[in-house]
Image (cartoon, rainbow, N blue to C red; front, side):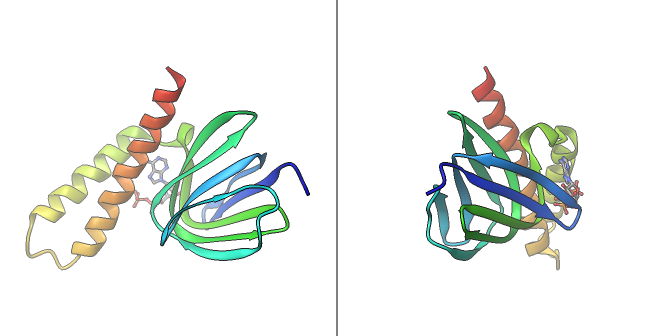
Amino acid sequence: MAESLRLEIVTPYGPVLQEEVDEVVAPGSEGEFGVLPGHVPFVTTLKIGILTYKKAGTARYVFVNSGYAEVKDDRILILADSAERAEDIDVERAKAAMKRAEERLKRQDSIDFARAQAALQRAVTRLEVVEKARRKAS
Ligand code: ATP
């Protein structure tokens, strides 16, 4: 059995991460799931959330916007609509997106309610990723 996992995160905007890691916890649609080396193969859908991976005892955080995960042969492939590592998240952009979404949601007649809710969730989750990474670093 391999002692590490290969984590690959790909989005339509390009590759986000390719790394040998020890452990991954990802936001599955039905709840978080953890993957260690030697995991049985499976495929699942992802929701907007935080992917955590550990490498040499250090945890790192990645924002993941929906998509799929495939686990096979000690490789976990994440195909997400968008994804950013904590250090690549633009906080001001996420705050602006959050404000825009909140304003849209205040207008009760919004026909794009679900869309605004998803935009809000993306923005809030990005800010959570940054916060988690900051808390860990301090
Ligand atoms: P925005 O309204 O700011 O575009 P969004 O949630 O609609 O946010 P996405 O559709 O998820 O954006 O992503 C579009 C592209 O922009 C992707 O490449 C994504 O990685 C990038 N992106 C979006 N928001 C941020 C952010 N706050 N920091 C860094 N990259 C971001």
